[in-house]
Length: 254
Image (cartoon, rainbow, N blue to C red; front, side, top):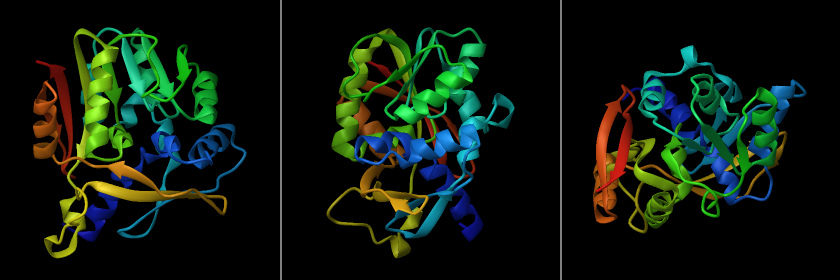
């Protein structure tokens, strides 16, 4: 894998750290960055730090894409949605707005108050500012997490916890749609950590010379995902894999 492709992967990997990571940090720097970008009050850059190397810029404009600008993986994900949809970690609301324009009954769920303001200002009708693990008010036919939104689970036990939570939010025959990536190539000479799963990454954000606390983010290889999903009573279907080894899956209860 070339340096250019690794950088492209990193951009894709980390881009959805922004909002769900606010579960673990006190300063909502990502939400502030989104709000400032939307209101055109600042063009400061947002960065993510991790244990793999130098900081990586998070292009905030990616949260404001229209349907034509989406990659094939995300278009396929939106095409799978059915019935009432919950967009978890909705960010600036781009995916939810596309679905709303297609006459879906869609709710954008986001923990960042600043991001929720942006979604409402952009015209999303149903916005809920809440932690997904505390949200219990409604049931849906589709749960959607894009741009590696499943990373909010933090670790493998968190993923198991999320699957249990997802079951309580889905109607009969409901589906869970998300993408992730296998980051084994990030480890030199295939030397993997011995104290944790190699897809559990520690990160922090930097914006306008402020830095958040470190937080955990999860990347799942497909084999581990399928194993845990099966153990938790879910059926997993691979929908698509792109040239950067990001993949899209659809889960349903057995």
